[in-house]
Length: 351
Image 1: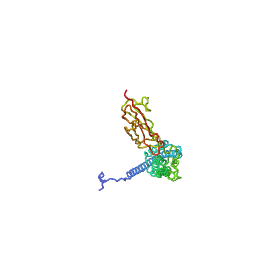
Image 2 (image 1 turned 180 degrees about the horizontal axis):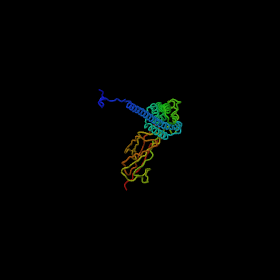
Image 3 (image 1 turned 60 degrees about the vertical axis):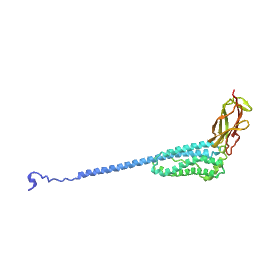
Image 4 (image 1 turned 90 degrees about the vertical axis):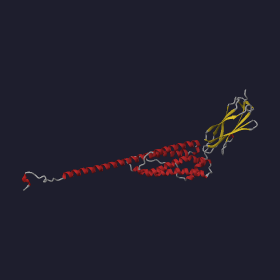
């Protein structure tokens, strides 16, 4: 008997429909997913590329700013220091070098704060060597030059100056290497970046030792740079002060049991002096020593002055006394007469 003769269809009997539409939908969804993934990868890659480019451009712009600063500094160094040695004095040399060091440190600070992209690692290493070498050379230049001027026969001093010049020369060469690397990087970006300037603190035509000998010879003929050492007693003040009268060539002081003597010592030379001794000797009319004192000054800067006080000095009324004040001599001092002062005085008796 056929199933159809009962008037109903068996639940076990059914038509099987093709599944092609569902497969198409799944394939379409998969295609869309793959396409979205590809687009996302491309967007991320493009964003990363733009970010790397921006980072590279920012680095190159900061590096160019630092290079422009050093270009100006190198021109000033060549014109005002190297070429102007004969017209410089020590104070002016100190001021110029201090200003250059400060400007170089500011330029380096900008570089230190910028991110270095991986593509610029080689260029940055060269620029870092250049800026470090320049700063080292500038910081050592004044001391090395003056040491050679103070003792032109000292080969060690000449060698020290040559070492400083090597630092500057290394900086120049490292910077030239940086420019080569940076120019390659500039060509790889679509953003316009200005040309990097020339920077040369020294002329590479001479060896460092020959250059050092030449500079020391020129500097030693400069009146402002040649060594001048001169300590002097500028002023002596007594407290209490003299009354205006005089006896036996000695100013008369008011009656007192103790005396304060203030001594102003100056460094009239052009080099800082260390371990300066200021001495006081009190004598009576017969030349007998009554009291001796001294004060030590660790350093007295060139052109500077200091006041030394000798307080609570015992004095006797009615006697002619003498304060003998001296400041220590230094090697090669141009004037030794001003290192010594005698101050006679007479203390009035009670009224």
